[in-house]
Length: 155
Image 1 (cartoon, rainbow, N blue to C red):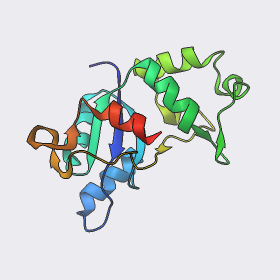
Image 2 (image 1 turned 180 degrees about the vertical axis):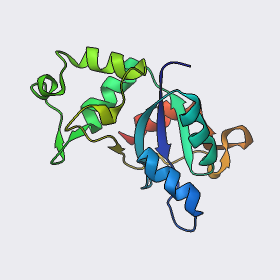
Image 3 (image 1 turned 30 degrees about the vertical axis):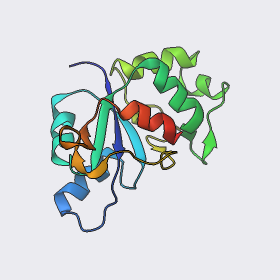
Image 4 (image 1 turned 60 degrees about the horizontal axis):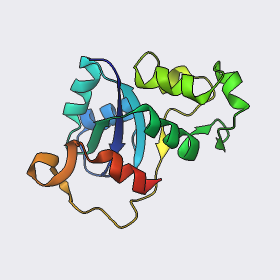
């Protein structure tokens, strides 16, 4: 298991059990339509399974991560990421930073002054499937191979 997983909270946090809310807090996706990037490890997979009724996740590729960071990546002070900021993050180019993130070598929280989450819009055109069901049952929750298409409409 190597790589990175894009995790998006598709439901709110009202009326959810305390252990699930605590796990959402640890994943840094407390609000609806907030997203983060986590390494593909057994412990994170367990956290995702615990919160499967609220989250949708999928593996992410380097090209999509670059697009996500350019459009929705923010540094401290809620400022967008500039090319000059990459040097302060310790990288020469965006390509090298996204390569390490998608390979699971580093996490978003390891990069100082970069916010470890993304705030997304609701998807343009709406959600075509139910937010109350798992992907295999006709919804969008849980492991969802179509998530990158949905997130692309959320940028």
